[in-house]
Structure formats: structure tokens, C-alpha cells
Image (cartoon, rainbow, N blue to C red; front, side, top):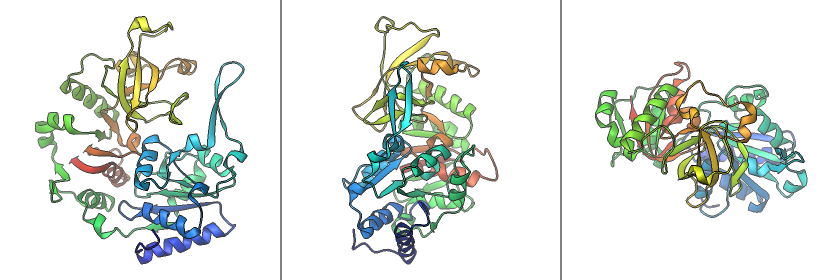
Length: 392
């Protein structure tokens, strides 16, 4: 790692991070870099240069999918976890209620640095809790993406996101030749994207809506994930895709792709809790005689395998059927103890896709907000790691 060749900008970033880490003024540092600027390589180099042992560094992301991507990029050097499994613990109180609390400081006392990837996913409360351990935190993110959702308590993080300590802008030559990166650069800089085939092997294809209508059934079968802007589009796409793939009815069947829409700290696999935005597949649908509990709503109970896991899955997740058929249906707060909120996940909105990547992605370009659309499109395009179809 020490013999890698850094650009002048990367060298400046290393110097800046080193100065921050050895100083006492600030606990947090935000390194921003566009897709293709080599953020991961740089961070690995920095850690080695700081002389920190890998067991003194915790690598974490908001989602399990993002943690898997970071772990794969590390090629066995280290394993990333979710932020929740790093700093929180789940327990059952005397009344049988599931509670989430921060871990004791002593449980993280051997750490000298916490590295948080996909920083735009972090909210104000998580940032506050992370800082409470008194450990230096290096946030890594991309200011070209959609910013964190504005909410109470998030002001400090929004300020940091909008004013990174260092911004990597130079796209590596090899990355710049990647057609997906090329298209992301056009989107980020608000340049026009023309229909056509991009890349020697057609890794990225840009088509019109007219072409999309003619070939969408084929793309439904090939895409790992379809990303759109509006919820109404998402609903329509999920209905169409299920029909093309041979799924019937309005409730989940074995093999259906689903997305979780609420946090359930009571359910976890491999130290990863069931959280809002997690996508995966129905592993099993329970027959009514297998379910002992009596429910107040007509419901479907499933086992759910998240798409970052081949073997492990969440057991006995119960979804009210009305959640999938009635847009006005809402679970009451106390009902979340019994039911989980899920929807079909073949198509998801760009906001739900943040923090994850898939090999084969289809993006339907929909303008929600003219002022921030370049960020929306850039975020959507960069969810693809290998092949992209962009419908404009």
C-alpha cells in the first residue's frame, strides 16, 4: 500500500487528514470525493501512514449493503460493520419491550479512529451518539450526491456536509474511462446526456422513453435494481415487473423482491438489524397453520433474505396485506411491535437507493426538483457498479 502513487491533490488530502488526526482541535473530519477520485484507496493509505493498527480502527456504514461493499473493497484487510452494530446494543426491558441504547464507552476504548463511509446517510442523532465516545471520526462521502434529509438535530451534520474539510475532484485516468463514471460527471456538471451506447462493451446505454416502452419487459428480467423518482412510478413499475416475472396476486410470494420500510431492532442477522431501506428476497411464505399468533389485520408472514447475504435471513416477518394494496393504510405506533412495513422492491426511489450499489441498474430519469436534479441523477447513476441503462 505504501508504494502506491498519489496525485498532488491526494497528497494534500493525506497531509490534511494527518494534521487533523494528530491535532486536538476537532473530533470529526469530512473527506468528500466524487465517484472515481479514489477515496477508498486514499483512506487505506492514510491509516497505514498514521501508524494505526487495523484493530484500532472501526469501519462502519449506515446500511448493511454499504458495509458489504466496503468489506469487499478491503480484500480481506478488514471488515466493515453497520454504525448501529458498532455503537448501539439492543435489549429487552422488564416489561418485555425492545430497547436500543448506546454501548458503554469501555466497549470501544481500544479504538483510535472510526471511519464512516457513505456519510450522507448519517442523521443528527447518530452523529451526536458517535461523537459521545470521544474517538476521532473520519467521515467519507460525496457532496455531489443528494444531501442528508434535513431534520431537527441535523444542522451540525448538514453544515459539515456542505463544507467538507477536503474535496477530492480529480477523477483517476482509469476511472475516467469508465462509461458509468463519464455519465455521472455529465450529470453532476449539468451537461446534456445524449442517447447512445457508452463504453467498448456497452457498459452504459442511454435510451429514450419510446425505446424503453419497446424493451422494458426484457430489462425487467435483467436488472438487479430499477431506480425512479416518484412513488407512483415505483408502484406502477413494481406491479408491471411482478407480472412479467410471473408473480400473481397482491401479496408477497416466494422469490419476490422486497424493501423494508421501518427499523426493527428486535430482528438481526450477522449483527445487522432489519432497517429502513434494506432490500432482499422472500425466502419462505408461511402457511396459516404454521402461524400461532392471531393478527388484527389480514397479513402475510415471510422469511426475508437481505441481498447482501447468501445464507442468513430474517425469520417470521409479518406484513399487513393492506400495506401493499391500500396507499392510505398506516400502521399505528403500537402495531409496529407485531407487524413490519414492507413493499415490493424491484423498483425503488433514488432516496431509498442511497448507500447501496448493484451490478446491473436501470435508472428512469424523473425530475422531482429542477434545482437539485443534477444531484439526483448523479446519485442514481453511481448506484451502478457494472452496467447501467439510463432512460431519459
